[in-house]
Length: 331
Image 1: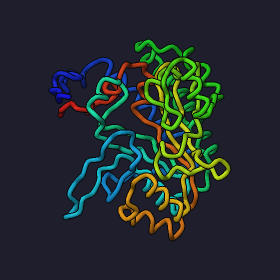
Image 2: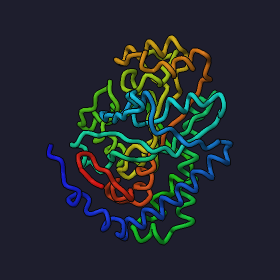
Image 3: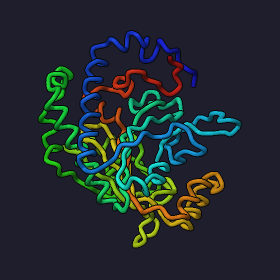
Image 4: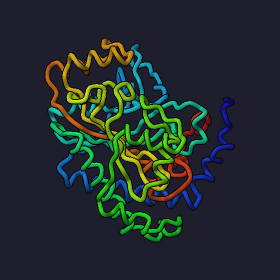
C-alpha cells in the first residue's frame, strides 16, 4: 500500500489543531484524564511514569510491530505496552497505574478503520494479588466515573458534538453485561459473521456486537494462543485464559483489555516458547519472576478510544492532537 502524504490524511497539522472538533476533543480528554486520576488515586493506586524504551516490550500487540532504537550499542524497543514493567513494579507499588504512551507500527491497511493510531496512550492499571474480577470491577468503576465526570463538567461540549446523556444512561448504572468468548463467537456465527473460535474477536465482529448493546459489556475467557504469554491460563479449564475485554456500546468496540497475569516462572518460560518467543530476550523479567513477583491482574484502557467513545467522533485521529496514522508520513 502506498504511503500517504501528510496533507492528505487527516489534513495539515496546523489546520487540525485549530479545528473546532479537535478543541472539543481536547477539552473532553483533559476532563477524562482528571477523572481517571481522581478515581484511581481514590482507590489507593499510585501513579508512576512508565519507561519509553527497554530491551523488550509487549509481544502481544495485535498485528503491529515495535520500533528499534540504538541504546549505547544495544538494540532496545520503544514500548508498545509497558505491561512487563507494571508487573516488575508490584513489589514496591502493589496498586499502580500509568498514563502510558505507546508506539505500535500498525499495518498500513488499518489506516481506514478509524480505530488505529501509531502513537496512542493507555491508562494502564495493575493490582498485586488481584483477580480478573478485581480488574474488571476497577475497569467498570473507572469508566463509569470518567463518563459521569465528563458529562458534569463539559456538557455543552458534548452537546455540540451531538452526544446525548440518554445514550449513556445504562452505562451510568454501573451494571455491565458479560459473555464468554465462546458465546460471543456463537452470536456472531448465528448472524453469518465468520468469526474463528480460536482467535480474538476481529474488528468487524466487535463492531457488530457493540452496535447491538445499550451499555458496555465484557467478553471473557479468550482461548489460549490468542493473547500474550502473560495472560494466566485457567487451571480449572485448560486452554482458556483468565482474561477479558470491555466493549463499548454504540459500535465503538474495545475500550479495555486485561487479565490475570501468569506469575509462575516455569509456566511463563513454557508459554513463551509455545508462543514462539525466545525466553533469553526476557532475561531481566524472568530473573525478577524467579526471585518472586506477586500474582496480579490488570488492564489497559485506550485513552484515545475512550475519548472517541465520549465524543462520538468518527476516528481516533480526530481525538489526537498530533495524529500518526498507519502508513501516513506526518509531522
